[in-house]
Amino acid sequence: MRALQYRTIGSPPEVVEIDTPEPGPGQVRLKVTAAGLCHSDAFVMSLPEDQYVYGLPLTLGHEGAGVVDKLGAGVAGVAVGDSVAVYGPWGCGRCHECAQGRENYCRNAAALGIAPPGLGAPGAMAEYLIVDDARHLVPLGDLDPVESVSLTDAGLTPYHAIVSSLGKLRPGSTAVVIGVGGLGHVAVQILRAITATTVIALDTDPEKLALATEVGAHHVLVSDGDAAERIRSLTSGRGADAVFDFVGATGTLDLARTVVATDGDIQIVGIGGGLLPTGFFSTPFGASVRAPCWGTRAELIEVLDLARTGRLSVHVERFGLDDAPEAYRRLHDGTIRGRAVVVP
Ligand code: NAD
Ligand code: ZN
Image (tube, rainbow, N blue to C red):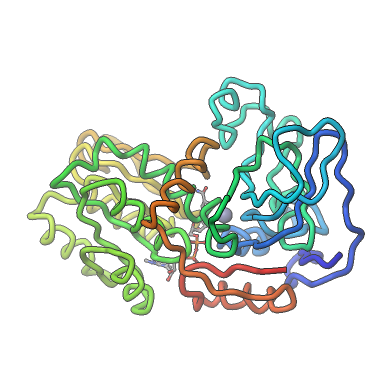
């Protein structure tokens, strides 16, 4: 089969021919229908050799959808021909977190060497994908796989962050979204769909701000030195009840700290490597800072159900497998509008 692999540190990923994998006991093989590109892949491929922990060669793709194609021994609960989305943050399935579907916070994954597809295990940018357990599959039903695949990360990750701040997002509140890329443009829609909060979206790129308006942001602002002042004035001086930072650089975290309201939440989703100084006087009284990771199995089911109501639409740029290296170049250059999705 053909697959997109990261093979050499510092080099672009390559389309290669590899053996089609066979599902072992308990495993499910999917014929991949769609695989999304995430900025985290760009982060992984930017790491120097001494910090790179994902194994080589690495078949990329942690957002996956497919049709069940072959079952390993003993698999029950899914059938050949089912259209499914892959829950990516695989855990052990047994610990206290996994028992609640919170496999994204599994206590044993690291020690057991369990890694998500595309971030250690072979990923979805291939003709076939092995999924380690049927519990990591959620039925797509009538949802279009290409338009829905990114809900497994670009939808699930913001949803997980937003749900944990729901108590702050009451009518009259304000949410700030920093970075309206793959995750951010879905975050705006989730905020509009499940809360009555006022959404202020920020980006450095005017095209992304136009997308933010299109998907429902009440206000859009250029992310520059004046942004904090403008947010203060839009909120009558109060600031934002929750700030969702999908960049995570020092500059955006500094903005988050400056504009968060008393008792507000800062959710650091972007892995831009910035640091937020925290001490009694560095953030407003009562403010919380959290670095959420991906989301739970139950939340993925909820995100797909929300999509079924018609209130989420991922803006997709579609690429073939041969064009996937070009799609990663465009992601790196910041010229993807919404999410890039590979259809192998
Ligand atoms: P993306 O490249 O699609 O979007 C990033 C957006 O941020 C772009 O629109 C860009 O113009 C904008 N941006 C860049 N610098 C900015 C600044 N200073 N101010 C405002 N906007 C700025 O990336 P993505 O795939 O949506 O991922 C977003 C981030 O979330 C990445 O850091 C990614 O690695 C991370 N991520 C984290 C998790 C998690 O579980 N925490 C999961 C997935 C992705
Ligand atoms: Zn991701």
